[in-house]
Image 1 (tube, one colour):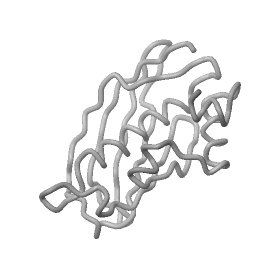
Image 2 (spheres, one colour; image 1 turned 120 degrees about the horizontal axis):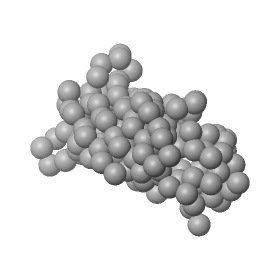
Image 3 (cartoon, rainbow, N blue to C red; image 1 turned 180 degrees about the horizontal axis):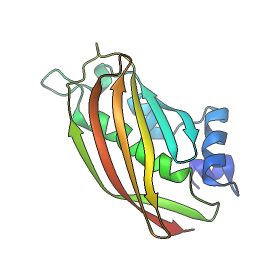
Image 4 (cartoon, rainbow, N blue to C red; image 1 turned 180 degrees about the vertical axis):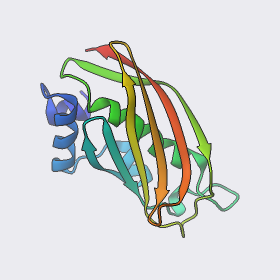
Length: 149
């Protein structure tokens, strides 16, 4: 069973995510990379993380996968807020653009995702990864498959 099903079985997508936040539950990826789902709204989701040594690559910067993971999570959960209790989604593709390097000195990062459009079978979302000063570090566009449970 999924964490979402354990916490919010039978609830709409946005209700499931709000239940996760209220319960303080996090999936393994959020624990491993030390980030949290902070906010959800109708077609929006925000993740917050503080990049640290746990996400460094060999050249002394935060690995691009850290940014990609936060952006993918923000896009996916933004879509999740628009789903019924009978629907789920998966990412079909994501395109990430890196605008500014991230280090452990970058401070808290916010991945802010929003739905661009959603249909019966496909959804499109965008997200931005910004620091506490509002500087853009990465952005993404994503295509997601919407499915019936």
